[in-house]
Amino acid sequence: MRRLSLRWVVPLVIGLLFIPTFVAAQTDSLETTPETHEHRGFILRVTAGPSYGGAFDSNYSGPGMDGSLAVGGFFSRHFAIHLSVLGSALFAHADEAHLIDQDPDQNVYTLSGGVGVTYYRSSGVYGSFSYTAGAQKLSKEESWDGDATFAELLLGKEWGQGGLGYGVALGFIGGIGAAENSDAQFSGGASVRFSMTLR
Image (cartoon, rainbow, N blue to C red; front, side, top):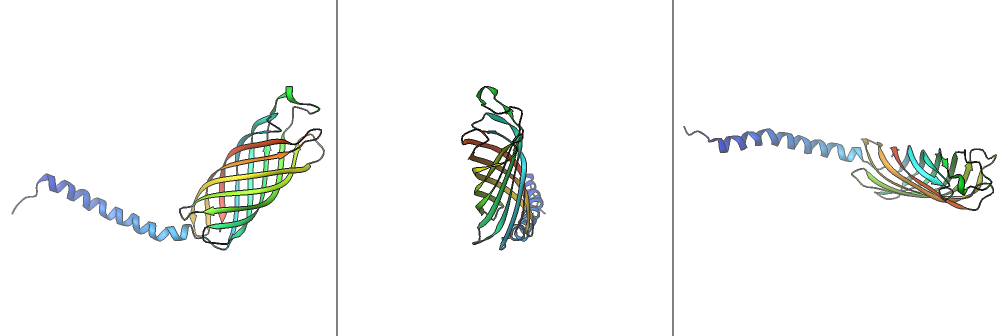
């Protein structure tokens, strides 16, 4: 009987070990992918996470928290339209040299609502844009200023089972608003957020 040389034995052993693993991985992928990223008629997404930004033309800047809520539905396989609520809190350090009639020791809060659209890929990657109108407030002011508009861009990736997805996203919020005794000025920032979607 002829013996197999090492140059044949080694590839054969590697192949016998690798092929079952490869087949099992492909089978598992085929079984879980449709279930993991199944898009239904309804969508409910919540995001929240730490941020860094500036308010009132960067007169106030520092770390903070951003969050958003989206409620709507899919109108095609990959696209959903939704109502959006955006919120942020900026725990700011003020540039006192540029402040007029404002206390530098204040936080900045924003809250707005509007509409948005989200594109989902079957891989779980998504991009979302929302345009909203709302209010902005310095923490020591008595009332919210209601003349503010904000836009949000989310770029994320989710994993999950069935209709529940969870993951991470990069968030960007920017807008124009005014505080007491000031003209309308730009505010905005970037955040890293936890994302959870029921769909």
